[in-house]
Image (tube, rainbow, N blue to C red; front, top):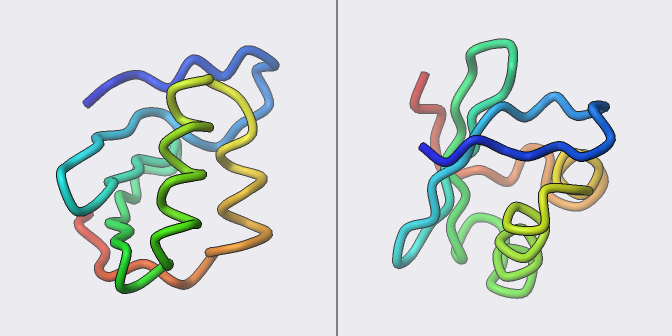
Length: 75
């Protein structure tokens, strides 16, 4: 997994993995969720990837736009 930069040190996200059709997000509480274009929508998934790579705003976006729209909980 790629560590999430979290420039502001205010995120609940620890790391992420960007796959060809999904994104796995690891939270600091130990939970890992998989988001796909089918579960969250392609536009939302694309935005999540941009925010993850930027290292800022991903946690807020997930809470606001896709909170429960994950395809599965991995851990």
